[in-house]
Amino acid sequence: MKTRRNQHGDTLIEVILAVAVLSLATVLTMTLVNHSHRNLLSAINRESVRSQINSQAEILHYFHDMGVRSDAADDDKEKWNIIKGMAGDHAEQDWKCSYGEKPFYFDIDSLTDEDNWMAVQGGGDEWLPEPRNEGGWIAELGRGIWINAMSSSNGGSIPYIDFYIKACWTAAAGGREEETSTLVRVNEYE
Image 1 (cartoon, rainbow, N blue to C red):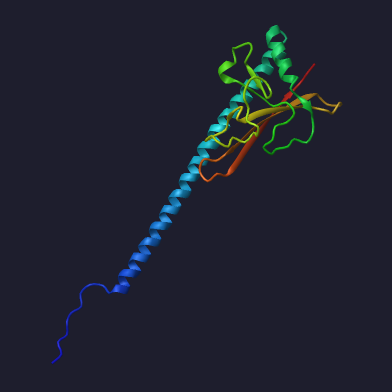
Image 2 (image 1 turned 30 degrees about the vertical axis):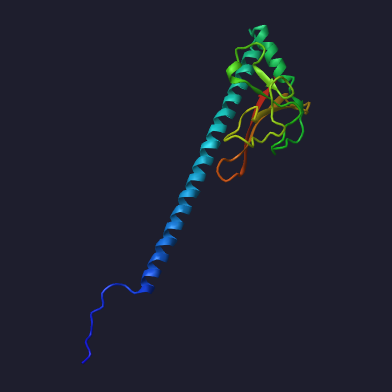
């Protein structure tokens, strides 16, 4: 007489299939978490760089406003003339990560110092040979963030100076090359 046993438990194939599905779900979850983390780091980098670019734009506006006032102090006029002197001829601006003719930036920590309020490439500050900040986590002033100035060349309209504030860096996560920039146009009324 045959006795029939009740089967309890899973077969080997069912166990292997369950482990495979669980492994696939784990790998997909880890991939999504890694991708989200990389995007978060990239957003933090961009926000920090944007903040520094905005600071440079505000300082530029400040020096312009102080230098063109009718009751401006001689020191303020002199600083604005130095900044205007950094402007090259207006040409098609290269938005890639390369310095223009006379790159400079404002040293935020030394704005009240009469000698070190503005850093110019080739001056006393050490600049990287390439504008892209390879070794750091984000771009910083003089190492991946700089300003180029271009004066207007059209004689019929109000003269102006375009200040291109650029930033280039290598993302901490993923090693992607990133860049951002902004344009500040200042009218020069005589």
